[in-house]
Length: 159
Image (cartoon, rainbow, N blue to C red):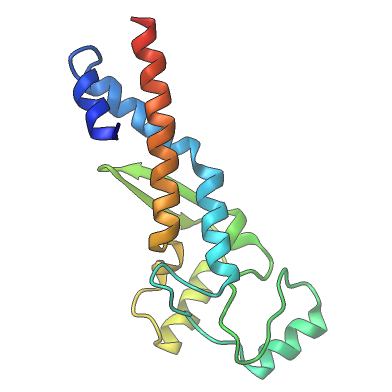
């Protein structure tokens, strides 16, 4: 049975507002999964479209080797993995609004990174680093759907 089927069945027993509130709660409960999926893309050096947003230079490689504080190695010619100090990743936030999920970071490192991405000109929109590729989006949507069905079943049994 699909989500649409469940919504139709439950629409007569559970209010629309109740269902929408439940969807919002479930979306927010997926925060760690969203972060894990984004991190997997960043480790691969990809944005939501599977594109690299920039490539490390020899200078950056040497600098990261000297400083020794990068979470992942910075290798000249390799795509940005977007994991240096970890603040951009650790300060990721999600917001559910208008039936969609907005993802960004409150890190101070975001503006300088977006400036470098814009300079490289490989992608036109730096915010695509926060989007999920189709494979990861499917994983997230399946998880939300599964949790929603489970919660609706619980609500139906309580009636």
